[in-house]
Image 1 (cartoon, rainbow, N blue to C red):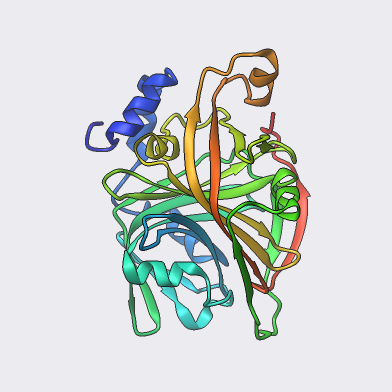
Image 2 (cartoon, rainbow, N blue to C red):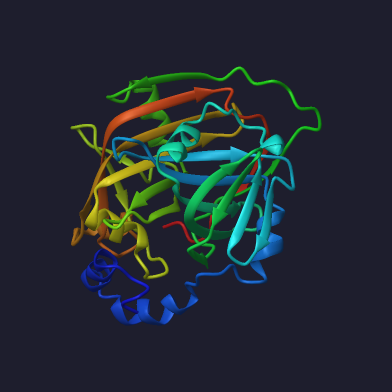
Length: 305
């Protein structure tokens, strides 16, 4: 598995005592999109993209589009059709890929709790964004809160408004502390970007006295791509989405691992893993009128601790 996992992933797998399991599960990682994943990808109306800015900072973004805005051209190529994208074109992902084409992509369908991940370079050609797939694999359905997302038939113009800052305000802290879901982007030392999801009951994200976020690492697929990237490169981006209000909150900063947290309370909070990680916000972007969808919450994940 040396050709599949980088040194950071191998180190964290060993720290977590999951090396043998990672070797077995790692067989699902491919350089091609699996055939059964193609119709799943093509029916999505959302896509989460991780990208890096010119200063090396990571950002996680959301694209919302009409059904058909994503097409799998072949096992190693995905097309995003710009005319069918309904979310704002002011998202930082667009300027980032002009500087560095590497992205991580997450397709997540909350209603069925399915998700699929891709990464590779993304380039624009006329009105299309073309992804050259370097890595593709599915993820387990754990910690996805079930909901439905649909687009209104009429396409209304968006007047996106973006605010930026460094330290989180009280209102933003309240949003984060009550969130049950976020998406995160990380990058390996070699430049590979992964975009992944984290979920739990509202309040699973703790805000420490110094403003850092403390986030449990629940039992997962044992691959540790995200935490392995953090082991090598602390630059990390988080994305919080309020689908009802059409707003997103993007955080960019530094993360660090905090394993072996074995108090009774910490074992309970982490699903008995004793693993956490910390995030220190350096920049934030709050965008209103980022997108417009109809969203309905259905239920929390039965896997949430």
